Amino acid sequence: MKMKFFCLECDLPTIIETEISEKNIYELTCNQGHKKNYIVQIQKFELLYELAAYALLDGYTREAVSGFAVAVERLHEYCIQILLIKNSVSKENRDKTFKMVSRMSERQLGAFYYLYLNEFKEPPQPIPDTRMKFRNNVTHNGEIPTYEKTIEYAEYIFNYIIRLLKKIRSIENIDHYELEYYGDYQMPTVFMEETQKGNPPTGMCVISMIGTNRGNRDFSDKNFKIQFEQLKERERWLYN
Figure 1: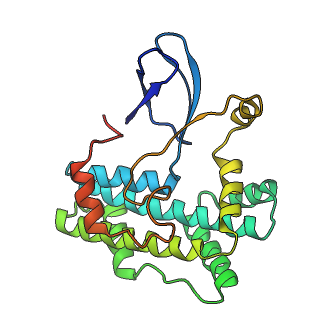
Figure 2: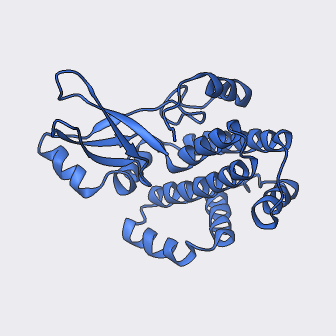
Figure 3: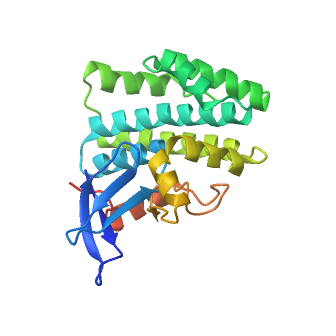
């Protein structure tokens, strides 16, 4: 998948095409030799959901289901990090501990459940077994799901993500914890150094279905059917 950026140092804005980055950070040079750092303001789980939605639009139902499922796993990781940051756990210790479970999704899920319980004093609402069975049949057993079943799953996962983000956003001083997370995992050291020298990276805020950087802070404006219809109509910012 590719993205387009614009070099604003050229007399006329020049388009720069590049492959999408794992961490949404880019060090690019236009054809006139202008070098610039760019950051796409989107969370990993949000990007994965968007990619899955594009796959669904293009008719790739198996790939869409896998993408939606992975988006949830990365959302749980994000919540784990936010809750640990809130409890003043250092990045070094967070990373050391997460490395122990990085290849074990069930253990990550268990860690999320208990951190959620500790924070909100109530258990989280789990994904039902029927949804998990559907996901496992597709990803592990080679089932080719229908469009109808896939879009139903997409809507459920969308609502699950929004519901959990609403809960996380209800935490007092959440902006502070999100900013620390951003600095720890989305702003590389070289970008920080350049920013301190007066050369901050160019931020690119994209339109996505989840919209962590757009719309209402409490996600009250998020409706799957509306967002999916808008996705069909708007120009893609990710393309082959």
